[in-house]
Length: 189
Image (tube, rainbow, N blue to C red):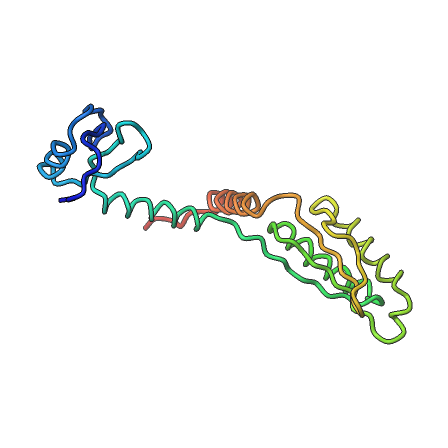
């Protein structure tokens, strides 16, 4: 039992949320002991303080489970990177663009890097035009978050998705569930 009791009475709330009323602290502790529950202070600033009869261990466990569930459902935005060269072949460009499209559909940001070598560094407009073309090709899926910037030998641009990671996850799960419903079932024997 608590030896240092500062308040003479508390507003007591029962284990199922029912109002018991204002009782002395000693009576509240006695009720908690009889019910084999803990007396937990809920609102210390209220006059008189509000206390509740509850199983505190169970309460802590349930709140930890809720926090874990919330973390599990949380979406983490990931930045994917695609590297290109200014003199890229049309087929290679289409392949890289396909990767960018896939990343944006999944709700990830894409950092597009154009690497210049040797004399290519004197022609940054080639890289700028290539980045602009890529941004125009994927504009229905994403938007330019940070415009093309020259960074030493590289030119960098970041494209962000229009839909959030959580929305993309939900859409993917819905599509998977729909496909699951359409698949033929195995014949029964």
